[in-house]
Image (cartoon, rainbow, N blue to C red):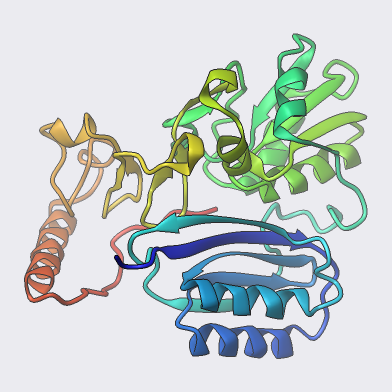
Length: 310
């Protein structure tokens, strides 16, 4: 039996220096161990999701933990039966998750972390406003019951939404969540800076919650979008039947795939009426090449026809 790929999602807000040297070191570790995925480095910390063999991921984790600043790495693993990424990228960025406000610094101030068990109690309090800090297309396929959807397309829009809809004297108790914990950790730092006093966020994010919480005790409804070829997971991090639209990168359910607006590799109900005929023709040709490559037992690695912003 073929060994599964280890998919590791990790992040930590921590003051990092000598980013170019760190970039070269981590890229070398990934290359030597056939690890694919993306690692983002910034002076505020590290963020990434990568996949490889058990030995390879262990080697990379050991390299990360050799940096004294990364002494509290938020790290979680899941499994995939095939490599979910095509390439390896270790990039230096201004922010590891972009909110666009230089004064927001999770290395200095964040909200109160909650374990999955504590989370259920806090969000069940009617005085708590529960905010999903993810983007709208992620929320469409799953979220916590009674949570608020800010309807943002990128995280940069979150501060403007807070300024318009929330007030630190009216909304006394705020709880936030996201996929792996990083976005809501930065959001909690922003909220504290904006004068909200009682601010909570789910430690380890939705993925940790789904991993640790039995379905019978869960307040989660639906699936959780993930940024790799697994597309979405459910309780126990089990795979779902969602696929990814090749054009708009939206998750596509089994029901969506029955729609007349769905064409594999070309469009889905979310984008069928918005993309041009020329784009559809080019996507159809690309899908043809993908199928031909699969028939030859090869991988087709071409430019994606769509992208999603974190």
